[in-house]
Amino acid sequence: MFKERLLERVANMDTDGSYRPDALSADIELQSILKYIQNILSTKQGSAVISYDFGIPDITNFHDKSYGEYTREMENSLINTILKFEPRLENVKVIYDKKDEKTTMMHFKIEAQLKNYKNIDVVFQTTINPDGKVVVNEE
Image (cartoon, rainbow, N blue to C red):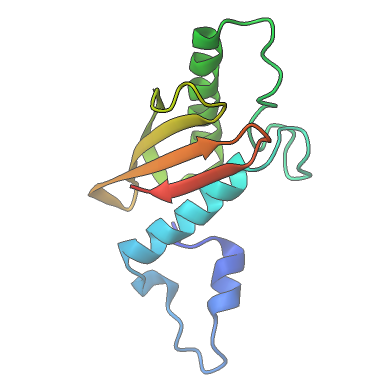
């Protein structure tokens, strides 16, 4: 399995042929994953040509659920989406972070392992703003 997505590999190719995707470090793979998770979680389900379930559901549509039910559904949705569209991660866990619960932003912690490096755990802090904008940072 490659450490970078196809378009990243194409963009990084040199004309002299010195680019070797098999020799990349875990840090480069982690940055690639971080960017791609940002893309996945910033996409609304149903809006991508690649797949109808690419992205996350509309976060503004939970008027018929309790907040606890909604956060559990979001955790499960994030896990399923990441497992389906980011194969470089495994053992994915998503935990709702109650910090700043009085604001209209939602915070989730994503914990996983790099599939190519069994001993490297990764943690991403994810913030979903009320307008649906998603920010993902490495913790």
